[in-house]
Length: 249
Image (cartoon, rainbow, N blue to C red):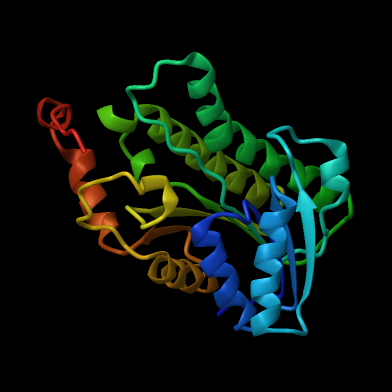
């Protein structure tokens, strides 16, 4: 199974990312590069890492917006062997503000897609890297079939998954040692769904993170977490539209 030593995390403030970081820190990681919109968020993660594994090297990178700049790429470590993309934003379908919807689409699709693409071209290829790189992008089961309650969020997650599939094929054709893995969590007990009243099928971030790390180490292309969401979404995808459009949750 794979071992990850040098890890870069985009979206270090994510609850799922935080649990993944803890697991990898205890599993022999040597370096973390943490990227978020807040220096305080990164420092909080670093303190947590250091309290568990004092010898680990950690660095903090602040990306204040959703633009991919040359300055940001220059701060990336070309020797990263796991790039975790953990950004996301949930918007309820009742929101009609076009700026809000645009921000949701940018965070869920445009920003992570451009980041992956630019990292490969401006960091990995430009530095003539030959080592194995795993890129793991956290999508969502919502991207398997966008529902009425979250069609903007679901559409963004579907788009980033399709982008990752195509980029993975490009890397294979170019004979780059890069594998792009798609993570599809179901409902997870994070701040994103804190207002949800129905808590059925809601999993804890630590359990989800264990499934993700196990799948990445086994080099699985698509990782559903918890595992049973693969079969739930299979049923949802084959459901006749006349029934599907009635789903409200």
